[in-house]
Image 1 (cartoon, rainbow over the protein chains, first blue to last red):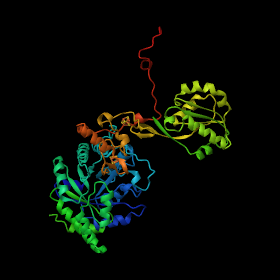
Image 2 (image 1 turned 135 degrees about the horizontal axis):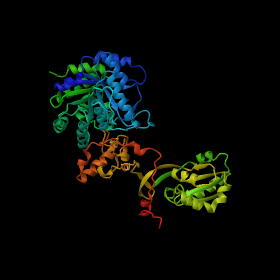
Image 3 (image 1 turned 45 degrees about the vertical axis):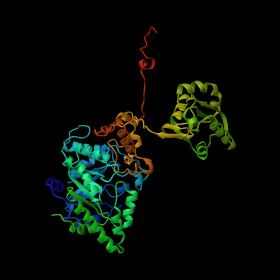
Length: 294
Length: 229
Ligand code: SF4
Ligand code: SF4
């Protein structure tokens, strides 16, 4: 059974993290890094699916490698690149390869990536993908055909608490739950008060929410995200704190400290934190060490 | 209204390589509005082709040039000119190219003179915008009359992705997010509850190409034709 599911069901405050496969076949260094820095420290490891629409090594294969190295993956699946036949087939494959956790997302538009001339598929949207996946767990495909072997899947979805307006996100979150979402990981959270008020609106849905933590690497990165990434708002005071850091070492220290501070801050409002280190995998243990997870 | 834009003259010339005598067809409807196949543009094309050593055996602007029956009728008057040509250049949308192929008796090359765009709403003279993708299964009833299939860059049916910022789509800061438009309009109409039901995936069997529509006699003439009539 999925450890992630078990921990969330027991009401533990759960930490997950994330890796992004490389552009090319050099996957093993990433698996080794995960083994070194994440294994045993987080409940599960998300593997992004052709993240930012930049073509790269596959999520499903990476997830299987994590399983083989004794780690629990969360398979991310986006709707951009596959139609309903391929998506359902990959869900069956995932289950067959010992992967239970699946995070269903829409996916960044193809023009955001490095194959801007690609055809976007979006045969299903994230809500419909969740419904299809849930159907599979009930023993039938989207056309109602009976399966020969039913997958066990723990289905997750995403929500963006800092979207403005947030109401459409909340409406969609409800739909995702109706469709089959059993847990949520959020887009990056920095402002505890705003996150608390978001949680007030969705706590009644009764589905565990894990706050998304994007580790700040520099003031420049924060400013870039504020200007360019929808639904991400790094408060000015955090940017100021980051700005004071001159050496690389100090920046790492500060980034780690701020990430832990957010996790400690959101802890009483939600069921977990999902750390997106964006390449800073090796600093995840220090973040966790600074969290009060008792 | 079907939008079209003219192919560059160089491309047209390249496509006409080896064919010296041409007959031109314009359209008095959409292509006239888009200035790709109106009388003036057809005449200007004739002059330019002649400057480049081609012979134009004749030309015609048919309203609309996507109607095979209409084309057949009007082609009668220019039969000789069409007979004399090596090929036909259609200065209108792809529908007109197909209709011309179906309408001419002679088997000869028919060239597209434009790139066909989309079914567009006319905002004002010379300004068109895509609002419907002609999906065959209209859901405007539930989306405040704004089409997510067309107005959302990803064609999402169950609400917005996380990519909207200041009402704009992640794809382009100039582009309105279709779902924000729907959300705002439903809000103003006091019908936000329309966003709540789960919407099933589109039935792409309805989009199976090429599509066809054939009316029954009853639909065409209002009542069943009887032998007595
Ligand atoms: S749903 Fe959209 S694309 Fe389909 S018919 Fe209606 S307006 Fe056109
Ligand atoms: S930002 Fe809006 S229009 Fe763009 S893909 Fe997302 S929901 Fe669709």
